[in-house]
View 1 (cartoon, rainbow, N blue to C red):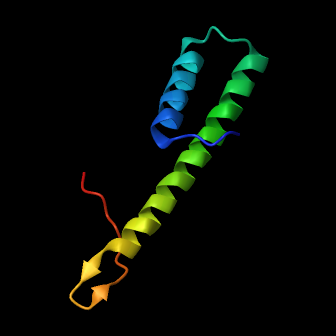
View 2 (cartoon, rainbow, N blue to C red):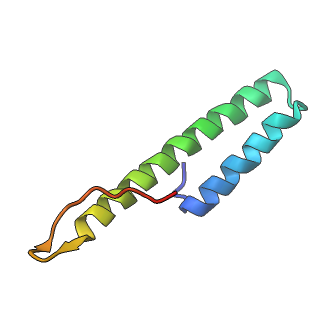
Length: 74
């Protein structure tokens, strides 16, 4: 799979979900779209995990840079 930006991968994943929700695809095409969606989902998860690691490294404390867990606010 070519390298995707996170935003483009999410958009493509949303498009696949919409296609699958229509129920207009044949079985083979649905399975292929589902597989593509799963691969995109895994890629997005990997990108998010890598971003989280980078954020952890960059959090500063009085003693310099130290690692802290990043918890997004809802």
